[in-house]
Image (tube, rainbow, N blue to C red):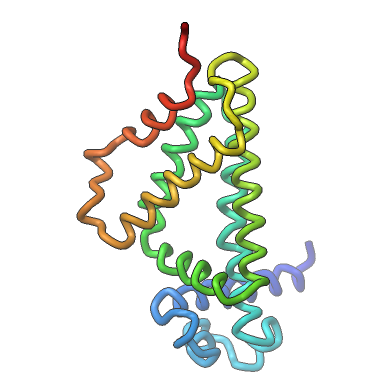
Amino acid sequence: MDSQTDLKQERRKQILDAAEKVFTQRGFNKARMDDIVAESGLSKGALYWYYKSKDEIILALMDRFFAGEMQAEDELISTDGDARQQLEVFFEAAFKDVRRFEERMSLGYEFFSLAARTEEVRDAIRGYYRRYQATLSQIIQLGIDSGEFSSIDPDDAATAAISIVEGMALLWFLDPEILDWDRIGDLPTRIFLQGIMKREL
């Protein structure tokens, strides 16, 4: 990779870092390109050289936002252990991410709000969740094949797992007092696993 390519990547990261901060504080509707210029420390010309509009920045930021999540999901497949252990790792990592990225959650919900009005954004987020589902479905299918899990539809079970994580994240975002992570602990994980484990007759 040459120095010019490095500089371009550095500038794009600089702009997206600034945009993330601005969007988190002001939301997509109220944020202006001038706000991102001021936060980035770059000139307006430099900003428009890399991104022609606020919408273009939003899409690039969304790609970056979900890319990290998808990488973590891909790594989940290579986790050592049986299917149950892999799902335990998934839930533990997912709930840790929710707490670790508390400040970014408002940005994530900005994407969801935009998806309700913009087909391109909705399609992108749908693709992310389909891939998310496929990763978990693959793990659940391994558990079915090995006899750990009952004969359930792996896609439906994967959707249920995602719903648990996303639902708890939303609940915590809206009302942190109702959800004490330390008290609840691994209860959601145990409830889910008890529902899919194969029972001896």
